[in-house]
Length: 176
Image 1 (spheres, rainbow, N blue to C red):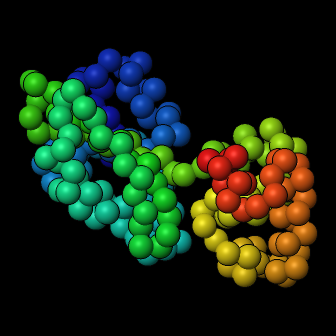
Image 2: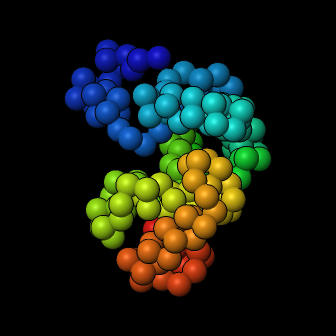
């Protein structure tokens, strides 16, 4: 689905299309637009967890629509049945447009490359840290990455040392 460049200035359309932040526009209950980041997130959730992002968002919009108005956009931490945590930011329709609702969706945590650079984590350590942020337990991380649980413990020890924390909870707080 592409953005209609007649409806928006071309530069703005290019900016929205290039964002890493998932942006979706709903017209009523129908999806009117999603940028490539939203399509990518929806595909990942579908493939990894068999979760339909649009179903989750439609359900969420039905629950929060009466609490969000033009002057007060709503931000919610939404946790899917898979355990995936997402920040959902809902912007209500403007006065002139009573149909369109804009939603941005951001995954919990920061990008792997950014925290890997900041804390000088190896590629594998960054993968482990990202899965910790997503709420995976050590056996799940080991299974996902195809390595032994004892290797995960060694990676976590190094990650804790490099990030200056001593627990998974503090790691999540540091990186999220």
